[in-house]
Amino acid sequence: MKCLILAAGYATRLYPLTENFPKPLLKVGDKTILDWLIDDIDGAGLVDEYVVISNHKFAHHFEAWAKDKTQKVSIVDDGTSSNETRLGAVRDIQYAVDLLHLDDDMLVIAGDNVLDFSLQRFVRYAVEKQTSCIMRYYEPSDTKILKCGIVTIDENDRVLRMTEKSPNPETHWCTPPFYYYTREDARLVPAGIEAGCGVDAPGSYFAWLCHQTPVHAMEMPGHRYDIGNLESYRQVQETYHGITE
Image 1 (cartoon, rainbow, N blue to C red):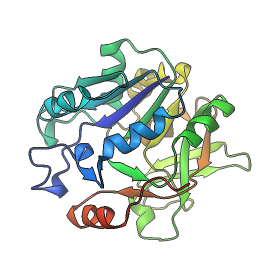
Image 2: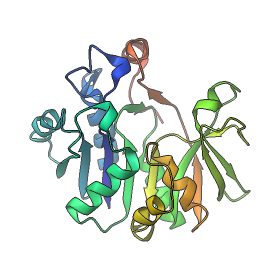
Image 3: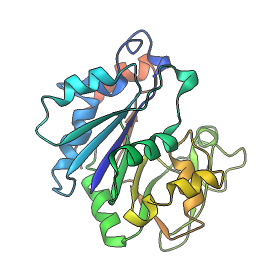
Image 4: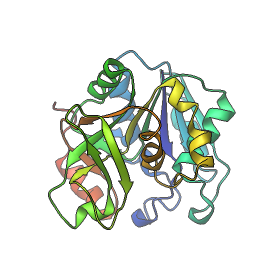
């Protein structure tokens, strides 16, 4: 299994911290955000390569960081140098797959969140289901769900529909940026792009995929801490205590 880490954003809302430095390498406690994620996932013993997808502006920072990792880590530079020219998450995934000739099951995650639960649980859920999978969490706020990917599921966790930032959400089940692709479904990314799925948000591909093949949604067993601006970064530094579940 390969783990693709989406880290090609420019984090403009965290300026000046991220004006010349990538958000996933910011420290939370004694570790970078990226180290919290990789060190947890690696405990499952199922991932044989981590692929960090960066933009050209920040790639050298990730390359320097990767030199000290004991895991196999590949850094992919997507060639973009500004927020305006970014490829979008789905095209970044396809770029990395093509460049490295990847043909495997894939865990695809955003590189800028910390969690108080282990992603190993999600990986095992997906392996058991033998389908591509997403996660879901219940968001009670009618305002917040307007900014989220929304999923409708049946009684067996199968995804019926997904929408990105719908003005009329069907449910309060939101989708965080953690995805599992079977090898077969990873091969369909070009078809999804060709069919017109959105490319900016990583969930857009799954919104298309769930109408082509079974996709399941595991309820998130804890909390994620999305570092979106300077204030949220300060709060995470004060309150995050690692994986507790």
